[in-house]
Length: 277
Ligand SMILES: [Zn+2]
Ligand SMILES: [Zn+2]
Image (tube, rainbow, N blue to C red; front, top):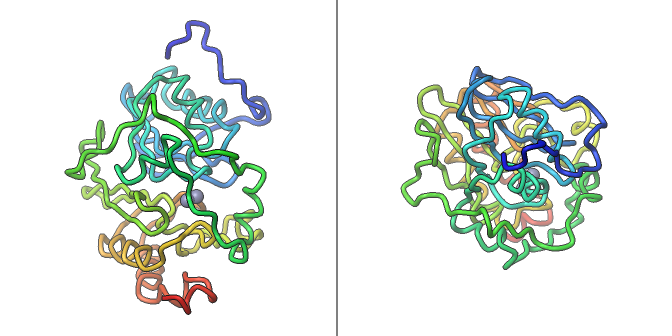
């Protein structure tokens, strides 16, 4: 960290609650920013760790607080973004300024992370729970992380994370990625699939676990999204951390993920979009 006095970013939610990451595996934890998860890869107390995604706006101080409880004042080696949607990069700029570490994303996501392009505006008739809850956090302009952003290597390796590999999972966004560790079949999906029904406000608040397709409002390419879900199901993940919803593991996860992959059109694609595919 650059600042000697350890000033936290000026953040409107700094002192609202006590922020702490929840453990999933000994070296994987997550912290929920309103209803979007960020991931911490690295055991508690480790000197080397990596932050996955940056949550919604106004949560940088809380993410830093959760990280400090786990790692002390050790900055992450890097930040890796699953994609550039506002709910995953909302606190990215403040976190990058605070930690001053590289941020990595897929080459096809670069334009959206350097202020060059905005994502297409979704069809709000397929909105619902997630959309309604996140709408106060909608940004007015695309994020610009030019100072810190680097493209992920083309060979699928992940900087600083030797055991992990990048799985390109487009559809939800062009450069959307998931991360997979073969050793114990751990998967971080971003929004390629999620474990909460995004159209239901109730499910979002109760955090009822169930495998669902990507958030509908924000997904422009359903054919690619379907291929991506099949690709992830073929990995037979044992443990998943998704961008929205609670982590899942074991047989229930595999059963529901395979069910989604096999019945993607009925289960994930919104009705009026089905006619188009
Ligand atoms: Zn998204
Ligand atoms: Zn999301």
